[in-house]
Structures are given as C-alpha cells and as structure tokens.
Length: 254
Length: 102
Image (tube, rainbow over all chains, first blue to last red; front, top):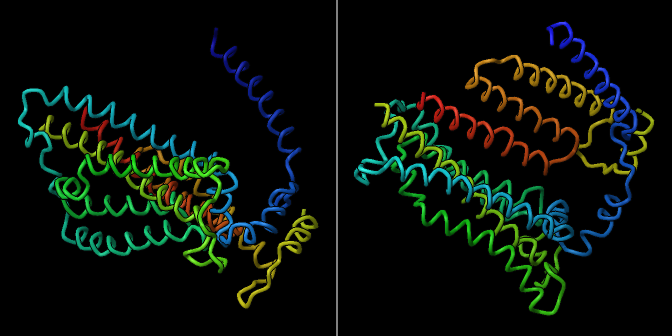
C-alpha cells in the first residue's frame, strides 16, 4: 500500500469516527443537566437511612457496597501482581549476591533543602490521610483518598532519606499483612451481616443518633477504615517494589 | 443550555453566607475549563517523558480544581490523590527503572 493510499484510508477512518463521535455527543444531556432519578432519590433518603452526611461515601460503602468490594479487590490483585512479577525478577537477579548488598545504597544526591522540606510535610500528610480515611461518613473523603495520602507520606520519607529508612518503616511482611487485613476486613464485614441472617453487606452496626457524627453510620465508617489501610498498603507495596527494582538496576549498572 | 443550567441550580440551590452569584460560578467554570484544555494540550506537546509526568501532575491538579468548581468535592479528592500524585509517581518510578536498565 502506498503512502497516499494509506493517508486516504486514515482520512476515511477518521471521518467515520468523527461522525459517530458527533452523533454520540449530540445525544448527551446538556451541561449541568441531570436527567436520572437516582441522584435525587439518594439525596432525599441517604442521610435519614444511614446517618452519614458524606453521602458519596454512603453510596460507595452502603448502597453500592458490593461494587466497591470488587473495586477494592481489583487494587489488591494489581498490587499482588506487581509483587509477584517484581519479586520473582529480583530473586533471579539476586543469586550469588549477599542479602544486604541486594538492597543497595539509595541515590546520594538528596540535598538538605529537599530533606527538610519533605520531612516537614510527613506529619501533616499522615494526619490528613488519617482524617480523610476516618471521616468518610461525615464529609467528602473516604478510605480510597485517605489511603493514597497516607502512602504518599512513605514516599516523602523515601525522598527525605534513603530507601533503607523507607523499608525499615514499611517492612515487606507488615505491608503485605496490612493490605490483606484491609481487603479481607471489607469482605468480612459483609459476611458478618450474612452470619447475622441479613443480606450481604447490610449495615448491621448501630447508626448512632446524630447524623454526620464520626461515630455514626455503622459499617460505613468501618469499611472506610479497612479500605484506607488496604489502599495505603497497596500503594506502599507497589512503590516499594518499583523503588527496589530501580535501586537494584542502578547498583547493577554501577 | 443556560435555561437547563438555571433550572438545575435552582433545584439544588443551597444558599449559605458563602454563596456566590450563578453568573460568577459560570465564569469560574469557564476559566477553569479553558485552563484544563490548555494544560491537556501542554501535556501532549511535552515530548520528554519525565517532564511529561510533571506536566501530567499539573494537569491533574487543574482537573481537580475543575471538579471542585463543578461542586464535586469527593471526586476532587480522588483526582487530586490519583491524578496529581499517584499516577505521576508511578510514571517517574517506571521511567527510572527503564532508564537504568538501558
């Protein structure tokens, strides 16, 4: 096929794609126009039903909690996959190397300014992550966001210090265990409801009396906590494995 | 479009001491949409991968602001953590790994 023919084929394909795209766009609801009934229904009943004023969390961890279990296990599976592939590679490479040497030195180019600036942020980051994870029921927040913020605190520590410090505060076994407890805890909350004779993931805990209080909303807060530690562990695990790989390769090249 | 918009904002309107006039909110949304489009173009035009990851982070930050202006604080937090932080970090780590192997 000549270049000219290929170009015409491209233009024809683009024209068809553009046609379908514009057709699809013309059928979208207008900007800011919400046609469906569910949002309005949820807005009316969610706070009264769950005592959670963080209605998005109420939807995530209660009304469509079953979907969220699946999403959580997607992340868990992804982290497991990264660990499986990269740990295998590392073992292959490690053969004949002393165990301590395998970790290798971090890059030594971190300046004092970077160290100080990142260390200052570690405390507030941990606090903010914990706040997000524990206030899903009261305000816009939740375990997913809180977990990622918590994990970035570990990345800040890596930036401020060395990989060895990162590993000392997040040992592989501990991170694996926390991730498993988080992912399993969510599922166990659901199964506990079944054991009590209720449908899976029914909110079996007391909802509290004050809507929007931290202690209100029963299993919504509990699930958010489990999601938070699972997400934090999964991100620390993925970042840690990638870092270890990078340092190994860097050491190999040096 | 503005008719529908006005209808929806009327339905959802909650007046607080911090409420701003709808016209001002529209202006804010338009400004942020333009900024997001500009940042997206910038990400595409940045050809060096490490710089592109940083540009992507800035784009994620603007996208988060856009969600905030569209009154979706929960999505804002998700976009902020995943789009502006986690994704660029993973990209940088992957780049470091690939580079050192070469």
